[in-house]
Amino acid sequence: MSPDLNAMALFVKVVEHKSFSAASRRLGVPISTVSRKVSDLEKTLGVRLLERSTRQLRLTELGQDYYAYCRRGLEEIETGTLMLSERQAEISGTLRLSVPPGLADRLIVPLVSAFQATYPEVTIRVLITERMVDFIQDAVDLALRVGNLKDSSLVARPLIHYRHVLVSSPGYLEAFGTPAHPRDLAAHRMLTFDGWFDNVSLKLIKGRKVHRVKVEGVLALNDYAGIQNAVEAGQGVAEIPSIICGEALHDGRLVEVMKDWRFAPTTLSAVYPSNRNLSRIVRLFKDFCIEHVDALSPYASI
View 1 (cartoon, helix red, strand yellow):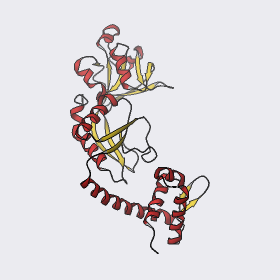
View 2 (cartoon, one colour):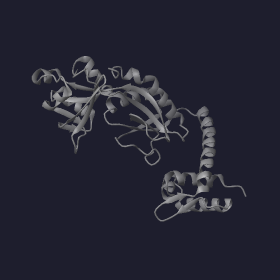
View 3 (cartoon, one colour):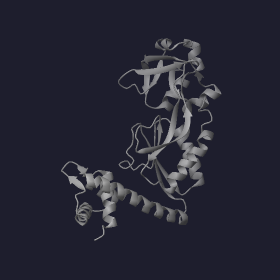
View 4 (spheres, rainbow, N blue to C red):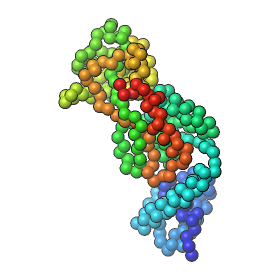
């Protein structure tokens, strides 16, 4: 007897969601049906695919190999189905994004607005969070992440390179003076990103010189937009990504402090699972970001 393709698909989903109950909830299929189908698949194959306990599931050695083949097979089926639907349907549906704090008003909203102007039938939901999301559990299609990618199961497509900048307002510098060296920051009012429990450590670079300094924030926020508002109001000195504060630097509301001492450059990337076939909406949005992000962040590379 040939294996049931539906049972194979359920087996893959159980492994991806790490439990029968999670797969049942996500698929809208009774847990009894999911369990029975996977058991029937094991009987048909004559092998044990999963070791079950009250707390967790574990793939057997044969189950691990079989899962890899099943997943690739299902991806091919999904790709074929996607090809047919893309050729027949207009661009509509829901896109779920995860983005880090501080980028919503400066970058994400302009990108989303421009994308929806082109594809008005697309609904977009944005989760703003600092944590590394689980693409399956959090139902995220695409994440924008800062810095280097450590998870080898993910693909990162760089969108824009930028750096953090030490900034203050002209009024504050006129009143309190301009620091010339990182050690001078101890005498200034520092506004810091996060620093909820501990002081913040800044790593500044000048040629081959590296200077680390711990600063105690008189105001600590985990929101760069709020920090920038406070700096513009003359409340002190802060480290802010150029992708956020670039426009304010360009028009003079902010001034870069200690231009010779710089933070290491960083990258904003579009991230998605390597084993997932991207839907047409996700691919279109990723490509749209690549094409338009520079125009929407003209001062990021300051």
